[in-house]
Length: 265
Image (cartoon, rainbow, N blue to C red; front, side, top):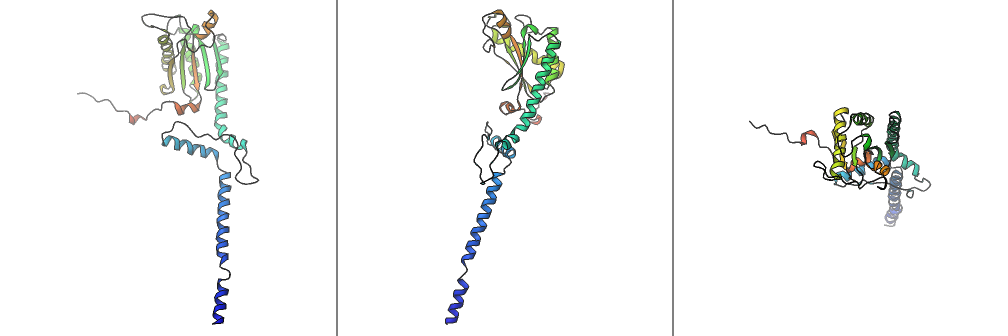
């Protein structure tokens, strides 16, 4: 009996090693997971977040900003490393937008339009601004022959990108009241639409990338207190929207979504 009891005690003496081994294994797995999270591909994470946002009907995208604390001691997450994953495509687009600006400015100098045609880079993209004196007669929305050539040349430059283009019509504060244009609202929209139609006709511009809007006299670039300032405010802007604005633009449905018209016998 004594021998059997001693054998049982010896058999149970090292059972704690099983629990200890399980604990070490779990800790190892835990630190492997933490190390994996510390090396997460930020670009892939942003893509997944954007896909989930669209699937759930959200309009905003998840953005990673700043430098968070490192998960693994001694391996800090570099802010440059995160930014490089996000800014690679934006840097390429920035370069493309600067190229558009340079081409527009070069064309304006060649045609003697440096004072009436400008290009600038804003938060929303490149804005090519052309004074209405270079495009339309006073109080009219009909493009002059010279204006058609200007619009055609600008369109040939802008068609090289895949960005959305918004044509914006602006007027000064001088009132207008004619049979066709009861106010500056109608005039500004009509001028923007005339430019869109010319782009479609002369450049065969993809219509799904174009939009037209009118702002009347309510988006001036200078005070309406002199003739020179009013000439600056009477303008048409070609806005090359940055790619990120596609997220808030109405989408284009595939062709099979549209119901074909029924033929009446």
